[in-house]
Amino acid sequence: MSTTETPTAKERMAIERAAMPEQPAEERVRNFNEVNLGLVEEVAVREAQRCLQCKNRPCVQGCPVGLRIPEFLEKIAARDFAAAAEILQADNALPATTGRVCPQEEQCERLCVRGKRGEPVAIGWLERFVADWMAEHATAPASKADPSGFRVAVVGSGPGGLTAAGELALRGHEVTIFEALHDAGGVLRYGIPEFRLPKRIIDREVANLEALGVALETNVVVGRTLTIGQIREQFDACFIANGAGLPRFCNIPGENLKGVYSANEYLTRVNLMGAYRYESRTPVARGTTTVVFGGGNTAMDSVRTARRLGSERAIIAYRRGREEMPARAEEVKHAQEEGIEFMFLVSPTELLGDEDGWLRAARLQRMELGEPDASGRRRPVPVDGSEFELPCQVAVAAIGTKANPLLTGTAPNLQLNKWGNIETNERHQTSLPDVFAGGDIVRGGATVILAMGDGKAAAREIDDFLREGASA
Image (tube, rainbow, N blue to C red; front, side):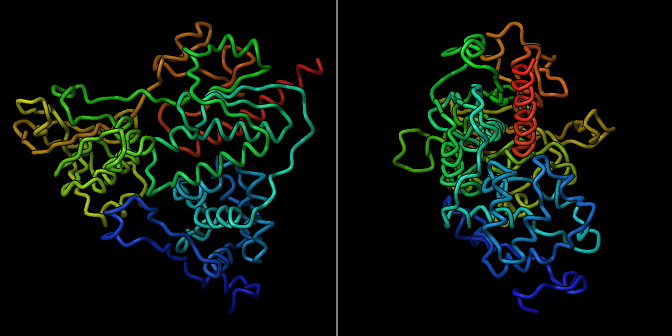
């Protein structure tokens, strides 16, 4: 069967899942170029033809932004890439991003019927294919509604803020994004390495939003430069999506030594400030051995970055086992291929320094798994007398983040929960009726796509709020 023919159901079932071309591991550990290289047209068409076009569309139910997956796959299968792009543009403000970093294996692909008897359709890779095709073929922006006359402020230009801004602009509202840093993208730019999400992709997605009329103001720290109260005076509604950027540390002796970082600082220095380039004005510590504490995607990003910065030994030290590790399977696979070492069931107890204040070793303790904790995972329990030293020059704590009180501390009427996150109702509305919120500032640490889902849902609610108020 050729890719120009419409396959029968039996022929669809016989098509094997495509393989993603990758930069060889021995080469990519020496550069920051993207690892996954993307599907070529023939492979993308054939992969899309694997979709069974299920009537109950379970994959859509698994997508936080509600992408019409069967429809856009059907267009790819028919080689109508322009129509696929139109669907993608209407449903997802950041398709080239989600096609690269969204954990589809836990969401849309997990529910794909094909996965019950083999491999699911590679929905994420096909999303990336169409988004990249759009960039090469200068497609027109999505169509907008007529101007509404309403002004909406968005705090934060991360995935939630960018998504909400795009959705609100499509609905005809005048949108301004306020970003604390000097460049847009939030965690997409400072938290995700170039080898997973190239900065040109973020630039392109932001430019697409600006083409819709979204205004972007950088170097505006809401809570210092501007307060929520001032924003409420100038705008008809506000969406807060400033993330949870305050790092957590292990709370052990020695964390003030030189060479010890939070994952936030480490990745920001490299990703946003270009510290991976030797000519960069922003320094970052390098060593023959780097140890990263944690087992999530941020830990994987940190340890793989360390490997590219020259560490001969780049080690993940995780207090639980492989089965409990929350990182994406693809990221773990790539890390293993790149020579990353995994030390399971260990936890740091102290960081040791030399006479000049530089890190020289981490003292670790072996753990065993006990009863499940509140997360449902078995709780790590220390093993008495099992401590040992690991010589290292760089250590990175990648054990999560929490809400930064800079913004919320200047908005006393904004109700928070016990963790300092903003509380919202089912409409993403805060205790201030014209202020909405979503993403990590509400959820705590979560994924890019969940923040985008919040941004899209909140945009609908903000639109309803504004129009209901106008008609009252």
